[in-house]
Length: 104
Image 1 (cartoon, rainbow, N blue to C red):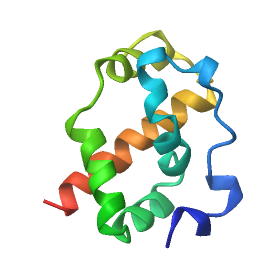
Image 2: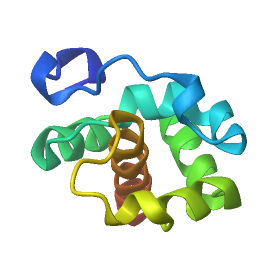
Image 3: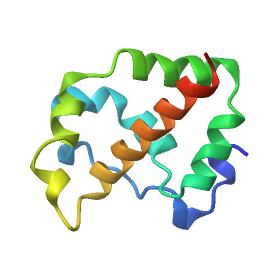
């Protein structure tokens, strides 16, 4: 399964750069691609990545930006209705972490 094969309802909506901390904006495209809310679909996508995409996702994880970490651990983490951008970056984190576990 590729990100294109994921049902629309499991994909993140169009993400807004203005809703993301400046230090996280370079990773917006990754969040749009891997911010899959459904654990099963996200895992299946990660398990079927090409080597180039594996490297991009693993690179994100190994160089995990402080700005993203601060945002994901900040006030919005306590929200009962976080923004779509916050959810997508959380799912990106989960995808990158899973990729690191299976592509060592």
